[in-house]
Image (cartoon, rainbow, N blue to C red):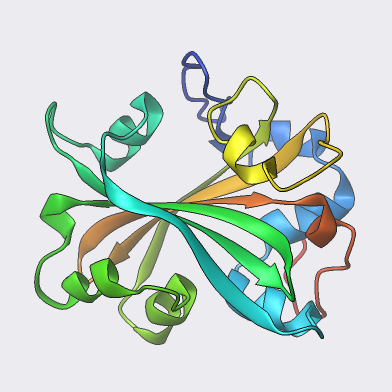
Length: 198
């Protein structure tokens, strides 16, 4: 039976990537959601106008309820929250929200708090000890917390977006990465070499 997280107010229903609910995802979006490679590398592959990262926000904040559960945070444990756009030229392709619990920013992981405009994916995937623990996907709709910051730049806002979140272990510490795929990316074919299994 697929594991489904309880729905919280203003949060989408996150489900396991391999659950039967994944069949509702449009094929082009699913190809991006399912791809196990670094998203930074994939976006760079399809971007001829120059890839870059733009930080929209970084600061200490509380996690959303389902994020707290996934990260197994204590009641008052804060996270360093980093929200960025991955751009091709001046056009955002992905909105990403990363949560780094204060307890995770120790030792080698402290560098994650000083990334500035450096892609997080380059750091995570460059470390052979990084582990992907869990991948969940969700339909992001206008009433959900991550929808507005993801589409704030769009004149015409779509009725829904698709996103995934991945729980990584970096230097043995949990880091949660939310990636919301924008229409400008989903319209593109995921590069050859991506694993696509329904």
